[in-house]
Length: 337
Image (cartoon, rainbow, N blue to C red; front, side, top):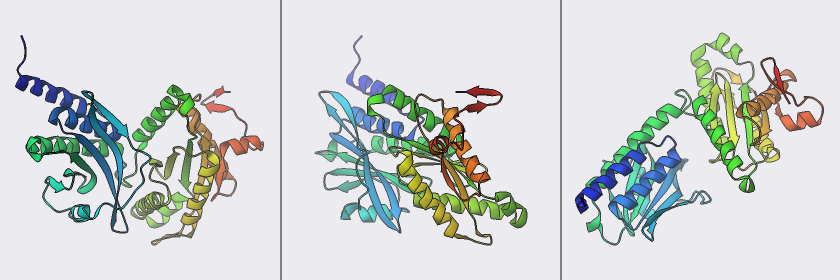
């Protein structure tokens, strides 16, 4: 029995909602939302812009666009786009964080802010020739569903103290990066994994208490966010240990960024505590290794820094080449070569 157009639309909406709510990564969630809007609402084109503030000034960067081409929705990643000041007509919108949720007219269509944890994190731009064909109630409902799932992902993937990505997210990000490298070896870009640890952190807790210790970790996380690139993935690995995944950055260049961060921490005055230092170890991410092996290599370089004076940046490959470390991978009592 042939379905009516209304039944077809209902099935399409439900199918897309199932797809949308099955996502467990922010970028996949965004792609699913854009695709759903193009397919279900039959708009001409959808673009999603990430938002950030630097010294109170908003910046935006296009993350993806979706359009219907020959009856099929095509998603275009725009990761190479740069952070730019938004057009003048978006400044008031971005700065009105306490404004009621709404859909706003812009010169080439409609704009819908998307929020997470009380802040605008992205802008959904809907290109339409006529607003009359847009079901605004449906658009707002889809946006609210996206926000709800984005909040759930944020809470599941973030360390509650520092707001950096947590250990769960670290394991997932490293595994996915290595899987991508294995699937597309010709498109591999150099990537680097770094681990860093606060030197003598136990003394901070013992002398000043855990509340001050937590403040140190929070401030260190903020220094990390200020020091590394937007595309660098930052994690609280556990306790006073943190991790950075540099995507598209070889070890030699990552070493420069890590050394710059080490110096910044060394020169920073932490409230009540004063000066602290960090030790750092890093290694190149190679897809033929296991994730555990890569972590082991970065950790061995970190341990070398900790046992040779602290406040150092050490690279695993350089230490092996110089004879300071052997290249055996040790897991428990088993050596992997």
